[in-house]
Length: 593
Image (cartoon, rainbow, N blue to C red; front, side):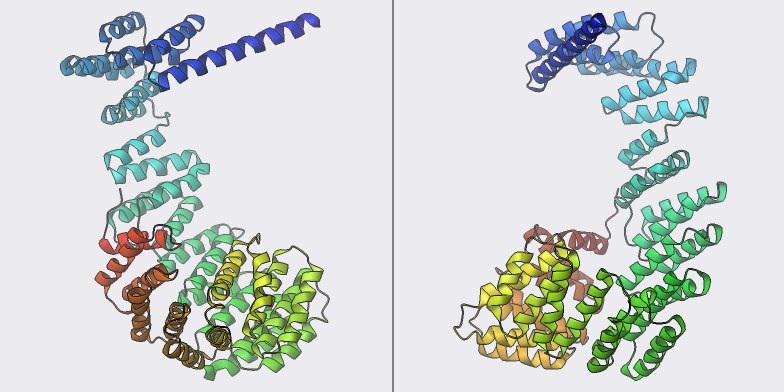
């Protein structure tokens, strides 16, 4: 036993010593101390003659020292009796460094011809070409090896090379072939594909990828090709075509419902109203799981409420009541009950009925989290009615019941917001300071924005008149009294021109103008911010919003490019930077390769 322990310790110490020697050799090389590195690698190679990494590093050092004849001698010794053509590639490269291109090409061709004898060495030969940036020759090797030995899998290597060569169609085909052999690569492939395709479905690269996927789907039917096509159509914002692919997947594999549900969520977020309705109706008609169907009904009613005239609210109200009557008011329908309460309060202008309805919902047997969600909405409706003290009671109950949870942090933010609405800025600020370190980035960001609004403006006027007006306008906007909120902001803009809140008043008002589809007045406000407050915190927001206006509503793509460009070059740390760059490149018609 002692002998075994001794042997293990000896092996460990030798291994550690070898690793230390290798680290030292690498350190010399990286620092450009090639003479010291050469001695170290020669010693390492003497110990391990089968380690070709040491051998090639010795060759590289001789080449760095311009000792080409020594490198040539070592390579010729190695080539004698070897079937592996990678040493011939290296000898050819050595001639290239010496300036003898004719001799170099002769050896390169000799190495390439070696795979005719044994294609198993193709990877090592091609890899040597790649190391020296001779990618065209590497591609020849990989391609010929796969012709000679079809079971070889060099699709990934070839795809990378084709990408570098700008042969995007061949690159996509190779990656698609590689996915067929290694399906787990699909997630990485999406990241690679996204570097080449754009939101423009007519882009040449998009066309190449679509053809590659369709061709593969015809040759070897598999839902993975439908999934990739759906993903590509989503990138192009062609949600109808994405849904066609997801429908095909669901028909072949009914358990694969996730894609349809994700697509429904995306279309809702992007306000692709008609497509979202079509998807949700498909779920309602074809899915058997009651909870999923209920959520689809809920989402469909919320879309209808958001995008329908008030004249239709009575019909929506009846649909909610009919569903709740059919499914019952129980733990399974909590989401639907919350949705109905929100509809009554924020759309149908029936906050009192909403409060009564939600208080009844609290009598339903629910989990603590579900109860907290009901109380959170109940607090919001009470805030809507300016019953701040009663709202604060419900928010505080959530904080006591679910300490340190995300929903508890949401409740604390609502406490701060309610306090801010009623002009208690000191208490609001104390709550917001705590939330700056929230585990939810969204809550932390919202808390920081509101805290900055309060702290930046509370000292301009001892009576805090402008800040109180702004908080009132904010509350009116929350109450869906958009025109009244705009009028309140007009008072700030007219009477508080020298105060720091001006840019925020202009920006808030511009966003409300957009809600009313009054785009020229929104444009005027954003331009005023840029002209007068370009050094302030909302300047990048104004530039980006203007670019969006020009691109999406005012049909002025050249102006949109100008303002996206300002975000890209003048506000590199802006949260809009990535989107601005992407949209700018799409407007400019860049070909990604």
